[in-house]
Image (cartoon, rainbow, N blue to C red):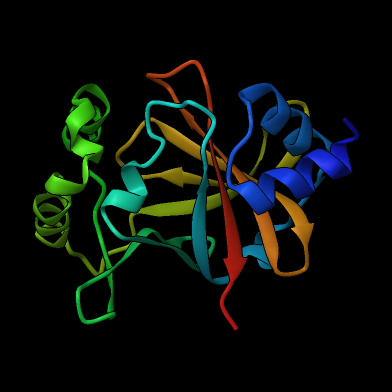
Length: 180
């Protein structure tokens, strides 16, 4: 399958194999720090990664890049549809990865409550130009997690992200759409 066709299929279905996702990621051009400034709505790409479904279960909205030093990596929607920022927690993340029932619909209200208890207005990450998979591009570095999110350009309003978590050999993939 051609990379462009694979990318179109992946974006439409929200799923792909890790191999196809990596092929698409590697074929895309890099983005600058300035390109990433703004608020972005996110969507997961399911690749049989342990995190598949975890962000959706917590009502993840996306990310906000104010400037290279001020990044809010986890934006969520509350029940009233209002956005709030969350401080990521390594222990909660590791638990979510090890407990398969964490993504079950019956557990979602509890997950959303726990997420809302971690609200913050403090920046939790920063942006830098970094090499990932032999290409330098804008990369979000979490302040307190061993995670880097690297971004590649799909178009002027869409980026493909690869979350590189030190604890897992396989990247987690997502797409960000720029808010108007």
